[in-house]
Length: 86
Image (cartoon, rainbow, N blue to C red; front, side, top):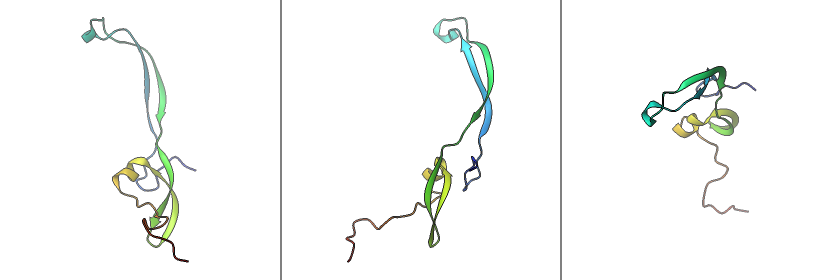
């Protein structure tokens, strides 16, 4: 499975991890000094959810920002507050 959102197409980003020492100037120190920079990856928070796609229900890998923003309609298992009929 790829690390990509199936709705917005968002992928992992790249950046740096900084290691620092020292006390900040505004706290009375000499300032922060960078002692090491290493490459890293910012991964997505992907969730595998059941998505309502028209009449059918499909399982997709979606990032949490798409779920929270309402770009995706989660599949309803059953209608709430109903008694099943026999």
